[in-house]
Length: 187
Image (cartoon, rainbow, N blue to C red; front, side, top):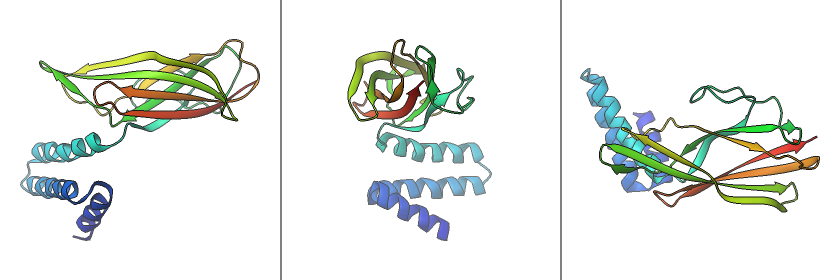
């Protein structure tokens, strides 16, 4: 009972009373379904609550980091030991965006994220910017939330020094946007 109260209190603070009540109701329904041995139905009910949270969330990143090599799947990556590169090196970003939207066309759900790039000095001076650097289009029969992307930057001729790369995802479905800022050093 205390756990349920704490979950409701947190939901009220984050989402407002109406949304929190809906999430609390879903949790209660899921618990009753699980008590009846209907675990698939209980998971589906909790998934409805998670979807409500996802839809309200800003576009942001659960994870975003430099990786040593292209990942093999969601969560299957090797972080770099540092963020020091030579000019012209392949600089690979692993990112797990959350809060993006889906639009349905026939039986397929579509997500459409546009990637913008800005490279700044550590003092904030914009050195390079490119809108619509890349586009991420996803089609699925379900609204996948375990989604990752990799973005590879190659900056030949960049002088030695400290920088920040800002990767902004703009969601063509919802209009939301979120930025992941990663510092790096060129030696």
